[in-house]
Amino acid sequence: MRSILELMSGLEKNIRQQNSLLESNIISYNLPHQAEVLPVKKRKQLEWEIIESPPRLKRTYSFKNQEHLIEFIGAVIEYQNISHHHGKIIIDINDVTITVNTHDLNDVTERDFEYARTLSQIYDDILNLF
Image (cartoon, rainbow, N blue to C red; front, side, top):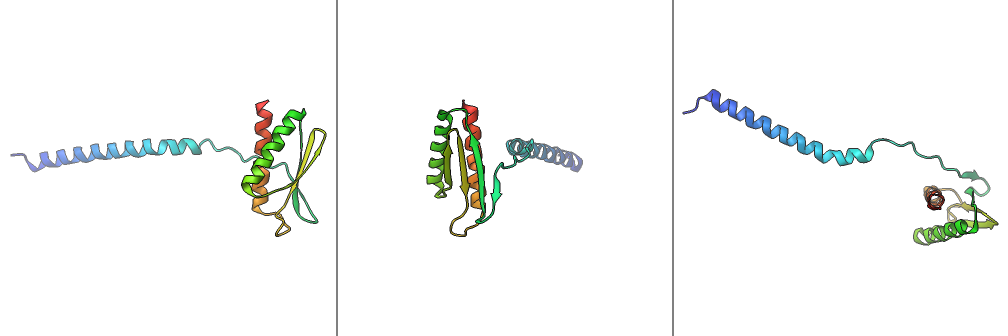
Protein backbone atom coordinates (compact mmCIF):
# COMPACT_ATOMS: atom_id res chain seq x y z
CA MET A 1 0.00 0.00 0.00
CA ARG A 2 1.22 3.49 -0.88
CA SER A 3 1.84 5.99 1.84
CA ILE A 4 0.10 9.33 2.07
CA LEU A 5 3.38 11.07 1.16
CA GLU A 6 3.65 9.03 -2.05
CA LEU A 7 0.05 9.85 -2.96
CA MET A 8 0.61 13.56 -2.23
CA SER A 9 3.81 13.56 -4.26
CA GLY A 10 2.03 11.89 -7.21
CA LEU A 11 -0.89 14.30 -6.94
CA GLU A 12 1.47 17.30 -6.80
CA LYS A 13 3.35 16.02 -9.87
CA ASN A 14 0.05 15.52 -11.73
CA ILE A 15 -1.10 19.06 -10.85
CA ARG A 16 2.23 20.53 -12.07
CA GLN A 17 1.89 18.63 -15.36
CA GLN A 18 -1.69 19.84 -15.83
CA ASN A 19 -0.69 23.45 -15.04
CA SER A 20 2.22 23.22 -17.45
CA LEU A 21 -0.07 21.85 -20.14
CA LEU A 22 -2.68 24.51 -19.43
CA GLU A 23 -0.07 27.30 -19.58
CA SER A 24 1.33 26.03 -22.87
CA ASN A 25 -2.19 25.92 -24.33
CA ILE A 26 -2.92 29.43 -23.14
CA ILE A 27 0.36 30.75 -24.50
CA SER A 28 -0.08 29.08 -27.89
CA TYR A 29 -3.68 30.29 -28.01
CA ASN A 30 -2.66 33.89 -27.30
CA LEU A 31 0.32 34.04 -29.67
CA PRO A 32 -1.66 34.74 -32.86
CA HIS A 33 -3.64 37.47 -31.06
CA GLN A 34 -0.48 39.04 -29.67
CA ALA A 35 1.19 38.87 -33.08
CA GLU A 36 -1.70 40.85 -34.58
CA VAL A 37 -1.46 43.56 -31.93
CA LEU A 38 2.33 43.98 -31.84
CA PRO A 39 4.14 45.96 -32.97
CA VAL A 40 1.85 48.94 -32.59
CA LYS A 41 1.87 51.22 -35.60
CA LYS A 42 1.26 54.93 -35.29
CA ARG A 43 -1.98 55.93 -36.96
CA LYS A 44 -1.39 57.85 -40.17
CA GLN A 45 -2.70 61.42 -40.16
CA LEU A 46 -5.36 62.23 -42.72
CA GLU A 47 -4.26 64.72 -45.33
CA TRP A 48 -7.71 66.23 -45.60
CA GLU A 49 -8.54 69.79 -44.66
CA ILE A 50 -11.70 70.88 -42.89
CA ILE A 51 -13.57 73.62 -44.75
CA GLU A 52 -16.29 75.80 -43.20
CA SER A 53 -19.60 77.14 -44.61
CA PRO A 54 -20.84 74.44 -44.89
CA PRO A 55 -18.48 72.20 -42.92
CA ARG A 56 -16.87 69.56 -45.14
CA LEU A 57 -13.65 67.64 -45.73
CA LYS A 58 -11.54 68.40 -48.80
CA ARG A 59 -8.48 66.85 -50.42
CA THR A 60 -6.77 67.10 -53.80
CA TYR A 61 -5.07 64.00 -55.18
CA SER A 62 -2.41 64.35 -57.90
CA PHE A 63 -1.57 61.66 -60.44
CA LYS A 64 1.36 61.14 -62.81
CA ASN A 65 -0.91 60.09 -65.65
CA GLN A 66 -4.52 59.58 -66.69
CA GLU A 67 -4.33 55.79 -66.20
CA HIS A 68 -3.75 56.21 -62.45
CA LEU A 69 -6.46 58.86 -62.27
CA ILE A 70 -8.99 56.62 -64.03
CA GLU A 71 -8.18 53.68 -61.71
CA PHE A 72 -8.66 55.97 -58.70
CA ILE A 73 -11.97 57.43 -59.90
CA GLY A 74 -13.31 53.93 -60.68
CA ALA A 75 -12.41 52.67 -57.21
CA VAL A 76 -13.89 55.78 -55.55
CA ILE A 77 -17.18 55.42 -57.42
CA GLU A 78 -17.33 51.74 -56.51
CA TYR A 79 -16.72 52.58 -52.83
CA GLN A 80 -19.35 55.32 -52.92
CA ASN A 81 -21.95 52.94 -54.35
CA ILE A 82 -21.17 50.30 -51.72
CA SER A 83 -21.13 52.75 -48.80
CA HIS A 84 -24.08 54.85 -50.02
CA HIS A 85 -22.05 57.94 -49.18
CA HIS A 86 -21.03 60.27 -51.98
CA GLY A 87 -18.63 63.16 -52.22
CA LYS A 88 -18.25 65.87 -54.83
CA ILE A 89 -15.53 64.98 -57.36
CA ILE A 90 -13.80 67.58 -59.53
CA ILE A 91 -11.27 66.45 -62.15
CA ASP A 92 -8.70 68.95 -63.46
CA ILE A 93 -6.16 67.36 -65.85
CA ASN A 94 -4.19 65.04 -63.48
CA ASP A 95 -5.70 66.33 -60.23
CA VAL A 96 -8.84 65.10 -58.47
CA THR A 97 -10.39 67.25 -55.74
CA ILE A 98 -12.95 65.62 -53.49
CA THR A 99 -15.15 67.26 -50.89
CA VAL A 100 -17.51 65.38 -48.61
CA ASN A 101 -19.91 66.01 -45.76
CA THR A 102 -23.06 64.42 -44.41
CA HIS A 103 -25.69 66.26 -46.45
CA ASP A 104 -28.64 65.47 -44.16
CA LEU A 105 -26.87 67.17 -41.23
CA ASN A 106 -24.89 69.67 -43.32
CA ASP A 107 -21.88 68.83 -41.16
CA VAL A 108 -18.83 66.56 -40.95
CA THR A 109 -19.51 63.26 -39.19
CA GLU A 110 -17.64 60.03 -38.46
CA ARG A 111 -19.02 58.70 -41.73
CA ASP A 112 -17.11 61.44 -43.59
CA PHE A 113 -13.88 60.63 -41.74
CA GLU A 114 -14.33 56.96 -42.69
CA TYR A 115 -14.88 58.05 -46.30
CA ALA A 116 -11.68 60.13 -46.14
CA ARG A 117 -9.65 57.26 -44.64
CA THR A 118 -10.92 54.86 -47.29
CA LEU A 119 -10.17 57.20 -50.20
CA SER A 120 -6.68 57.85 -48.82
CA GLN A 121 -6.11 54.09 -48.67
CA ILE A 122 -7.38 53.67 -52.25
CA TYR A 123 -4.96 56.41 -53.38
CA ASP A 124 -2.02 54.78 -51.57
CA ASP A 125 -2.93 51.38 -53.03
CA ILE A 126 -3.05 52.75 -56.58
CA LEU A 127 0.29 54.51 -56.19
CA ASN A 128 1.84 51.27 -54.91
CA LEU A 129 0.41 49.25 -57.81
CA PHE A 130 2.18 51.24 -60.50
